[in-house]
Image (cartoon, rainbow, N blue to C red):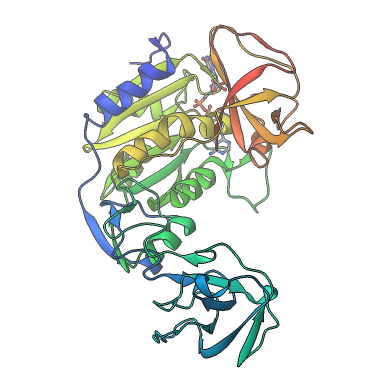
Length: 410
Ligand SMILES: Nc1nc2c(c(=O)[nH]1)N[C@H]1C(S)=C(S)[C@@H](COP(=O)(O)OP(=O)(O)OC[C@H]3O[C@@H](n4cnc5c(N)ncnc54)[C@H](O)[C@@H]3O)O[C@H]1N2
Ligand code: MOO
């Protein structure tokens, strides 16, 4: 049955419906993998990573200079005998008698008898005898064992996305293999007879396909395995066959286009008729018409076709669904910024505006809509320069320059 009147839900109500009913309240998809660090980028940790040992593993020098017994420095200038050189990587632990020191390099282990490092700049750089012209305080420039973390400390929790920064910390703490979640297999389909692959030429009425491109790339960035990204025609039989193929082996299917109330809105027509699909209007702009169903048991999310609507729908609904499948925890980015200009917002709908973030001369974070038409859902190129979306509440119809607005990083 074609539904033109739909239940109107808030953003939170619809998201609850997706996480509860569409995903059936399930948590992360089963399946983990042990992968070497070189293959872990972008994956989500299934288990916490602990430090194998203390970091640093031994007391070492923070400066190129001389390792000394502080008691020997007395009243500088003072002359000490250099009894050894210790470079980074050296396993030596030379013994120091009173009046002796060792020449030491940054990162080299501090001899057990020394307690202070004198940087070479405070000396005459002597190699057999060295004159020290200034005495640093006791313990200066010695980087203590376990000063960063101790053996067993958590370096990264389960649910963390493995970035370059996370990898660096894990590597430093001695772990070479991590346990990550299986990548969710996600299929993407754009619908519409008007869609032409970018690079082709357009006839009257045709446009370049961009939503499937955007979704497939974003899913890959977020750690999903995109099994296919296709365009399905607006005929119900072809669409049905296409969906059968897409759901084969998939954990999730994302559709874009054909969810509104038009006579040819194939996603809605087929999902409602053949899978008892649920179609809603959500109090948001863009992204008002939304739908979901399970097809062959696989969760299917159907986003509205206007490109900014698809992009915002993915951020607001698709990303949390994917995060749930991955057991991913998302760190919070900045949450507010100052509106650099004013704009209108539709009353009664939560508005999501692609914005660029900059800072003014006083250091305040400024949000500027990336397009003069704000959140208009067909301004597809407003997405390229957007750092975040500004979120304007349902009860606000006007944003004035200088207002504090909520933002969410993209
Ligand atoms: N009578 C009504 N009409 C519309 C309503 C409504 O409530 N009543 N809602 C409007 C809103 S809001 C939206 S959003 C759109 C959503 O429509 P559909 O999901 O059915 O999307 P389409 O009609 O298929 O396409 C909309 C627009 O986007 C272009 N498009 C579609 N797919 C792609 C793609 N893969 N890449 C680039 N561009 C795409 C398409 O050509 C259309 O211009 O419905 C309103 N109508
Ligand atoms: O709600 Mo639609 O997504 O504005 O264009």
